[in-house]
Image (cartoon, rainbow, N blue to C red; front, side, top):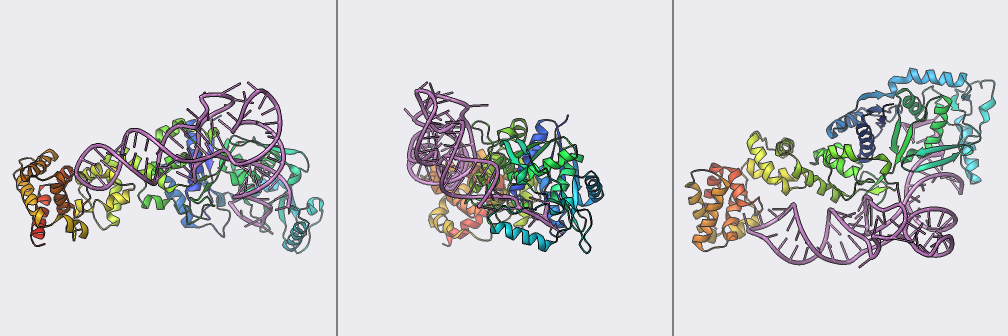
Length: 466
RNA sequence: GCUCCCAUCGUCUAGAGGCCUAGGACGGAGCCCUCUCAAGGCUUAAACCGGGGUUCGAAUCCCCGUGGGAGCGCCA
């Protein structure tokens, strides 16, 4: 039987890295075993579900490259099916209508809490024959009273729940709409999901779902409850940490494979390997080897991994990602050759694509002014001679290459009896506007002859007047 | 309160009874390379939550504490 996994987010909040990781695990598991990955949007909460959140899920999954084989399915479009199973349940005696009012339920809960008991429904309507006038009933699942349910979880091992701890949960509201735990069961059965991989906050729901599955005569899926992701401070993930939309990472200049690599290493490892390509993840990931404990989100490591992936990616691809980053900074970069050249020289000089773009601006347009500190130190009366010497040698170059530029700078230094720093730094500030850039020879090569000479002339005038 | 889950450096993890003087990675510190910034290389500080057992031997198995988390909704 083919492996079938699913990612089933609810669009009541923005998709964040916690959700992305469970999606990744499900996707990886399906890919590893040649299975099917299903995307299902659990939007039965009409009040809180939003169109925007749904869009973030769709866009986010696409950006990350976590493509689904089936779906997306929307639970709101499957209402007829849920009602059908509901009727079937009631007819078979697996579920019953409950006429207890919210007020009565509230009272029951308070009394139980008062004697320090676990709040649960007492089953009053289990054997009720007649409807209660004036009350729209909910539907409850008739959970077994005795015995136990064993959740065979591939991450946690066997987890045992006594049925006595479980009460008759509501599976349809008084307006007739089905609730989450019921929809999940029907969907997982209908979609023939073989492996349910989800956050371990669902572990407590699992025995109820298994009881319903059993009542339906469906086969049990394999469960894998993955631990949650905590914020960097060890507290529950919130907006302050990484609980922002996953698309924020795209906008901030992260590579999708870097984010995924970071996430896959949270709770899982393969020897001492830290950097994984998407192919390696698909080959090596093993859901059964995932840790049981929650792990904290570490932004520094994500940054490091991002740079590792940036350095490994083809410059052409980095160039593509650089375009929107530059555009966001007001630079319309159209020269693909230049873009690729910049990607090549800048890729080990930025932890994010955004940072790389910010530090590459002088390649694409003239800077408005020199960095004050850099100019004060390097564009002085003393630097006129080296600047002039380099300028003259460069302009005499037949071919504009890094090697030629290197010659020009070293020769100027030798002739003037100066150290490399005394020559390269003024040139660097002259052409880049700051004291930081890639090696001076490749910087000049990338900038091109015309731009380099023009900026050197500007700098010469500036230095002479300082 | 009840039920369930979890517990190795600051963080992510390796470790499935002797290979552990507890390994790797991020971050930190120092050094090297060097025209700046990086990248890279080397060195270094840093952990088995506590207590009982089991065993010739426990980070690893069991129990009890402690601490953290989740669930107990006509939310998902």
